Image (tube, rainbow, N blue to C red):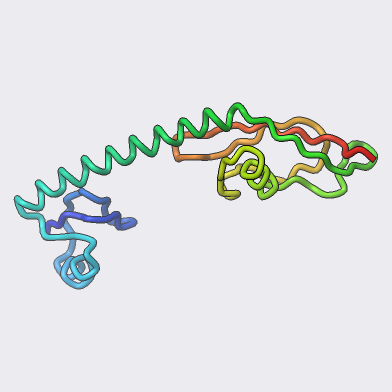
Length: 150
């Protein structure tokens, strides 16, 4: 049976796509969950409108992400931390610390999971930390870790 997907179904189809699926799968799962409808001529027109809306929504999201990336690329965050010999910090600077500082100082809200910091920062110095804003857009924030005055 050919169906028109109304929503994304992982591993099966995406919104606006017309695809052939098993009759039982369509009747027992996709239709009751309102994930798909039977592919009729009216449904095909509906598919085109769903695809157009998705394209517009994706373009808007990408433009917003690019604007946010341009804003973040200009940012330099400075952390003051206690450090011992060899410029090693007594604590560490984590992605959560970076996200909180972005929110408090620059009013830029970024989920800490989007900050691609493999290991916490444990040394004094300057680093460029990538932030994945969108699947196609990555920004770089400069993080400066200085010795806290005694």
